[in-house]
Amino acid sequence: MAHPLTSTLQQLNQIILGKDTQLRLALACLLARGHLLLEDVPGVGKTTLAHALAVSLGLKFQRTQFTSDLLPADLLGVSIYERDTGLFRFHQGPVFTQVLLGDEINRAPPKTQSALLEAMEERQVTIDGATYPLPEPFFVIATQNPQHQIGTFPLPESQLDRFLMRIELGYPDANAERAMLVGSDRRDLIAQLGASIEADALLAAQNAVAALHISPALLDYVQALALATRNHADFAYGLSPRALLGLVNAARAWAWLDNRDYVIPEDIQAVFPSVAGHRLPTRASGRPDPRSAAELLSNVAIP
Image (cartoon, rainbow, N blue to C red; front, side, top):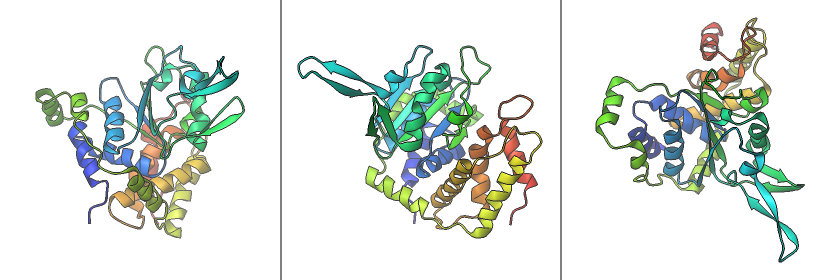
């Protein structure tokens, strides 16, 4: 029997052409209750993917354009004094949504980037000593341009570690690109999409993913991969326990998308580059090399 998100994948494939693996990874990230970082050159569909995902899942969507003058209050909200009541009233910012798209997140200064740390980790926001819960589910999709482009601020390690996955869309193949050239604008097609799953069903799917079985032997495999990153001479540091928890949850989500109630080694291998790639800065450059995570898989034996 097809899983409840089959129609979601079909809808997304009509908008983002020729990127089935990346779309499955994005859905797996949401099912694992993680946040997604899309890094690529401008114009390959990062924002379109985020918008299409929110609409297909029937979730409330807010988009914030990160700029050099964006302030934390512009994201989180602000307390405003009301003369009639003599009290301060909190006005929610765009973070109070189910899917928040932070567009070009690395164009904002570090102080504004760090405003999302509590929201992404604890699903809440603290303003003026008061704590406000965020909606369920809460999913951050951030896009960033390559760091060598002008006007970018590198995301600090603490911020990168809050993103479960980092995905590159890349350029479409020739057939997909031709289909886009002769078809309708992708953004116009989003307006024709309908919600393919209810919010309650999505939350139930997230709970089902969290309950998927993973054998002790596969947990040994996960720990062996972590040890390989921590002992690797080229890496400044290895994977954190938070990264390992995310890897296990992402593998469970990948298995669930394949209609299985158990995890196999191939599930871990499928999600490992996206989960680990942005968390392994090299000693030489101080920046992650996406190829390093893929190379590790060939050096660690499968149980």
